[in-house]
Length: 417
Image (cartoon, rainbow, N blue to C red; front, side):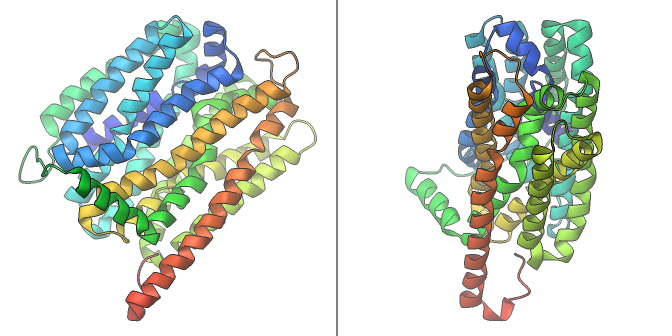
């Protein structure tokens, strides 16, 4: 049951990332600028982030199985539409629905994990879920690059869409909401109850700490994987198409390995979760600084270090969900998870758009022949997001610990944070 749900999430990550290695091809196919190319990912991320809270409420009302099936079918139809899109507006509509279907997967899988596994195993299973899901990014790197070169745009995206049909059938046959029943339905929620649940979740400092953890750790890897990594490595650092694809695949491989490691560390050192996050963010900032400050093209070893530390940031963002889980009662888990899951995608959305705008600004004569200098300017926008995220993590971890001291002083030093 978990494997089938997990494969649906993996497929969602694949569809989400499938434009990463096709960015330059898409720019030529639709004759668009960097800002217009970034709009694909911007729209996809905007829809994803905006739907997190509504999807959480839908899961509470209709159960994860129904919502997950709706997401799988939406992704299948959207990717098929993207395959046939021959104009920029049609392609935008297709990516909008890709974002919509993608938004319906992860929260559903997390709910199934929380229902089917013992509480002590949830942190590890959550990391394993994220780890396996990120393999979709690997499948969207080198294999998709080869498919686009050998099969062309339409056939490549149609083949990708076809996997959704198989998984939708498996989902119907295998997945159950709870051990005792195939599907569950929650009570209808009034506007008053929804507002009260969201307000209570947001007022909890642990939820905000989870939000800013997700915000700060994820955006660098997400931006590289979804759109700008391939152009940055090829045009900004002078690598070949093949090497750029391998670097993006390596980054996904790091996510796969780092996820279970963090899943084992966090339950053993729960009080130090925010400290672990700050250490990981600091490592990402340090390596990016070395790459951007390097005179000329950075050496391959340094670029490998970059994708390694950025890749660790992916599973590190999952720590935000654990912070939300231990800071909210079970009846607010969906709303808290939805709020936290917005963080990284809001940051990624801001970065994707900013990079496109800065590249157009710093590229003489326009077009898609971006210079290394233009990429250095564009990638430097990350420092704005890192500064904000680190400040807020520190701020809300202090508030969360202060709240525990006031309400349960005997628990201070033992309650997970």
